[in-house]
Amino acid sequence: MPAKPYSSGHIGAVAANFTQMRLSGAVKQQLVELLCEELDRLVPTMESETLAQDPERKTLDDPNRTRLNYNRTRELMIDRISSIDSVGSAAVQAGIEHVETHLAKILKHAEAAAEKDRVATIKPRHLEIAVSGMGLNSDDEEAEVDTIEESETLIVGQGGGVLTRSSLLSLARTHAKMPVTDDAIEELIDTYYMVVEKLESDIRSHAQLGGNPVQFIESINRMKTLMSLGWMRSMLIKAATNARDRGYKRIDIEQIVHLDPY
Image 1 (tube, rainbow, N blue to C red):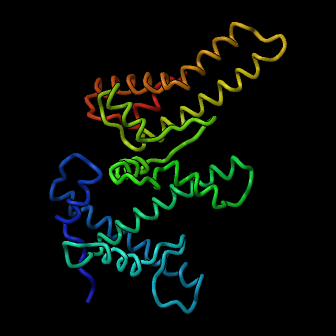
Image 2: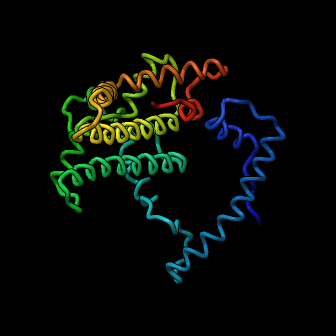
Image 3: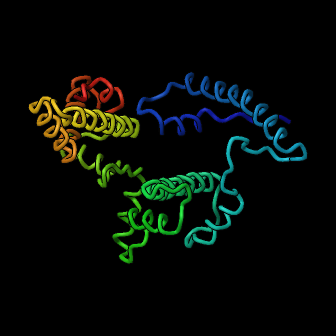
């Protein structure tokens, strides 16, 4: 007997995570069909790739990457609950995604520390730097909650400074008075370091013998503005103005890419 497709109500509830607009009943039903069609394409591909890696395997696997073990994660989560009896599959999936993301962040911090030492192996001292930088070794329980929440963002280091998604979200609340999407944050960080690299190149060029001293001073002043996050505040305010002019309630990547970063 074939499996029942998703219910349109369930798809509508899931879709609410990705759009603020309401969906008509016909759209929900069509989305059910589209998602099932995507599974028609996905599953046979995953099956063939799984068997290509292990011809004796009897269970469909993710051929593209190793995931945290589902059953072990579920058992570990069950050990940590206190007021309910069991852990559902949705909770396990969310737990796996969260812990894998947490692992990725720790490794990115440790990797950055290793790169600073110009070595290709992450060693205990690099992990200690990562753990300390993320606030994971705090003895203060209340502070730990705050730092863990902040560590949900990717920390980007440049010249000894630290720029985080949470710091940008704080800037957005304070100066733009508007929420910012993750895509917009990513674009803003990428643009920030693109401008930093351009200014560093300009400073090196103007510092050479015979360079224009006026341009050199201007480049230095721009770099000071960047390092003090004045550039970031200005970009967020401009993006918020653009979003409000268009009737949006949040800053999205569209507002960032259309700004002149210089």
